[in-house]
Amino acid sequence: MSRIKKITVTEYQYELENFGAAIYFYEKGGRLSVTRYMVTVETDDGLRGDYAPHYGATSNAMAQTLRMAPMLLGRNPEHRVAIYEDLKIAFRHFDRVGIAALDTALWDLAGKKYGVSIAAMLGGFRDRLPVYASTYPGQRQPGGLNSAEAYADFAEDCKARGFPAFKIHGIRDGNADTEVEIMTAVKDRVGNGMKLMTDPACSLKTYADAVHVGCACDDLGYFWYEDPYRDAGTSAFSHKRIREKIRTPLLVSEHIRGVEQKADFALNGGTDIIHIDPELDGGVTGTLKIAQFADAIGMDVQLHTAGPMHRQCMAAIPNTYFYELALVGPGRCNGFQPPIYACGYGDQLDDVESDGCLPVPQGPGLGVTYDRDKLSGWETARHVIE
Image 1: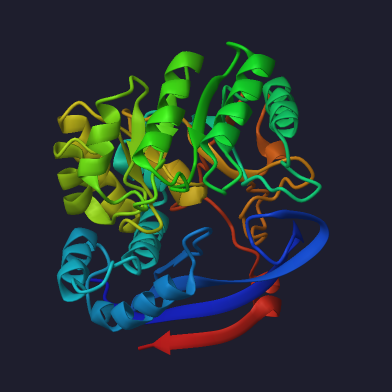
Image 2: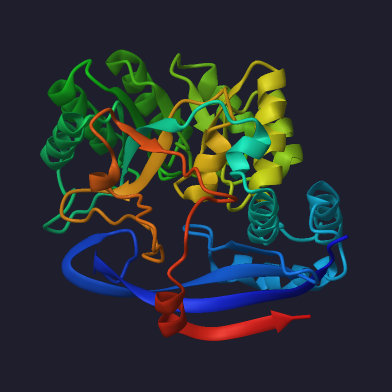
């Protein structure tokens, strides 16, 4: 029987092009250093699993992963649910985002052991995923998405590329009229040819502002309305009040963690669609728990951001719509994908095929190959737990 003998957490640093000092904003020619990490789990009989988070590879998540890792030593790597539950209880005073990288590395290990993808182990039923373009936030300064017309231009470009849907992250200054102006310009430009969504990212300052933008979603026929309110998307009561005033489905719960909190939020009327972040909500194990809960009560889910683990999970989730290609825009196609793959894997605009879909990697585990030489050259720290 395999036993986990070593966990390695490797920090690395690379540069994003065309980013300014504020990570979400476009700046032509700008370069921003980004630190991420990778988890490797090894067993006493030579098995190995890896996972390098994208958007969720924050310093906070890594700190929790490092604290959690010793609890895996000596465990059977296939006892993923038991490990998930033990970590959840042991770290109940924290948000437990560190579980995801460890859990996903264990799923990758199992897939490599049996020679099948994570999607196959989950009962995946599709190998192509419809994609929506999720913009980076707008800005007042020149360049990038700095006007309603710029958003409309980019939506038109995405439509021409075959994208079936488009989501606006507006100019985050809490101005409801600006939000509506951008939404209207995009709707006018791409018409009924795409499903449209908007995400003020919790920037709207008052309940009245949130309802105002929600009513515009109704009038314009938007597909969903995401995280409108300044409570940071955590109050079921406030979002229930918004839902009582509008018809457009609300997508909320990105900022609360785990199946229990998301279940409470949904059952108390805070959302129409549950938002799951696989890199923050417990990896593959946590994602499937939340998706299956939602399915049981007749509710849909959306997975936050992009990555190989997201694709493997989405392949096995029937109650979801689109894969989020985030964050993209004119002049910068990179989003947040770290350039760490040696197999051609990509989450950029040019990777999306003419049918508006991306493939689910078919190799064992996550189905991707990491560029070890590149990661080694970028390495800034290594933590070995054994």
